[in-house]
Length: 535
Ligand code: PEP
Ligand code: MG
Image (cartoon, rainbow, N blue to C red):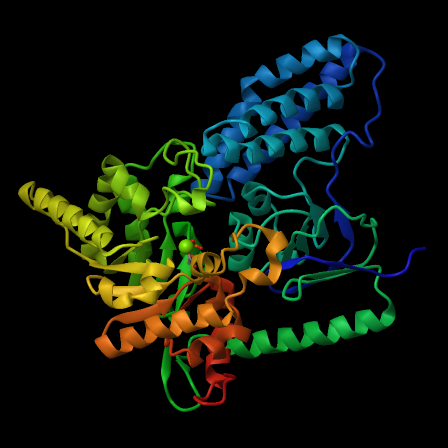
């Protein structure tokens, strides 16, 4: 028996999980070869059918972007062209898993080599299809992760994450992955512990392991002392969460009596179904990229209007800040973003919206038409010069005039900006045309430290805790307070209760956080007193 092994990665979603290690199988490992090519082909057909059934049943549990991706996967499986190609290879003597892997790997390589970033991004879905069928072939039921396990994988597609019921515990450990990925965002939203970037080191298929998502650490086959220490940390965290949950609907007031607004970050409109409105002061960031990422192409005006109205209706008059499409960078959108060598510094966010007015105007009209149904605020991402605000405002005015001319009910919302490019954070006074500021600490950090947010090798370089980043946050917050410009922070740092005192110390009084972190951030606010924080 081997002793304990400590494996380090980057914490992507806080929380503790204790359970057996479940290593993702590159299927076929336990596959028993059949006696004839006919039997191999039959096994393949059966596995494709099983994978399709699993996907079809997962579709019933998800909606929006996730449902679209599953629909795509199902269509690919039902189309039969992969099976046909694999049948050719089987007829020349290969087993079903080998033939299927050859066909899918070639397809994936083609997608990865594509000039189009959206095609390259699609390769994860194809890998998902490949692995689901391989799992079914080896008798490891497709796409299923057993309940309560610590699942170790190369990376994982959002669909696979969503298809699993995490309510029974367990966690995720990714060899690659990124803290900024969609899966990491989903894990944070749902409170599933997750670490990324552990690399290629060997991991034993152990019966027991401990995962600490905050510390970014996996302990495999822990000894009794390590288990006891882990249990203590987990009990403390659970007790804190229970205490916090008990008063989650109370306002977040600091020890010296200042009220801090705690809002929530959402992506899919259905996210609000799991959030009691009494727990939050509204939506500080709705990322609309998820509406645009599906297989049905870019969403039309009515589809967007329905999504925005759903969130506004849920908010019962509390503010809802909807961000216009922030595609590009780490969030390619099929049929919209363009391939670039350095996408984080290229056509993303408002730059792309202004360059593609025919797409932007559809979103603008949907937002104008949604505005009468609640306290809508619109936020522009990746603004780097004041002219971008003026251009967007002019387009809103033109579309409002057009709607008025056609007698369509609408209203002009407040238009604010994300502060996530250093040019804005250094000179916020030049951006006074914005109705409000929301600091995007994820991007601000990567641009200030020249450290790509999806590069796990850079580790601490991507920390908001850097004095240069904190000084810029304080600069924006001070400008906002002195000039009556509402300023909030909606980057991931807002969701980390260990950062709350630092952010409040920098002057912020408005935080927008992941749904699963609302209660603990409110609790951290209640522990804060001005002047006690470090620095
Ligand atoms: C940010 O950059 O901090 C932010 C909130 O936006 P996103 O993570 O969607 O880029
Ligand atoms: Mg950003």
